[in-house]
Amino acid sequence: MENREELIQKVTALVLDNWKRLSTQPYQVPVGISARHVHLSKEHVEILFGAGYRLTPMKH
Image 1: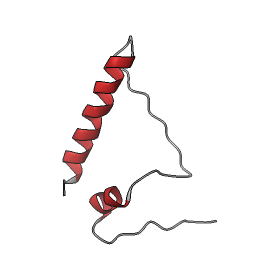
Image 2: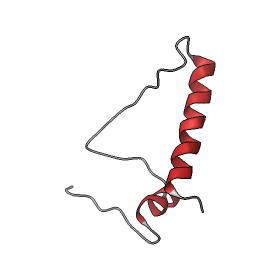
Image 3: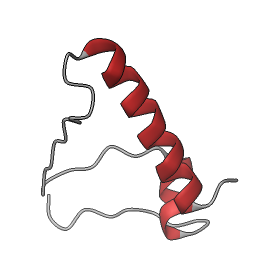
Image 4: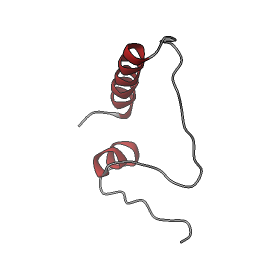
């Protein structure tokens, strides 16, 4: 399993590679931020927060 820094580097490289192919301005990376939800796989949650960690909703 990769550590957090390796995962961030790998994802950043993939985003930049894809953006360079699609954009006329290759060094601008679109970023979306939401304080209401997050999209993570179970594997990524465990990489970020530790094995067996489960996310829990603050409110329904």
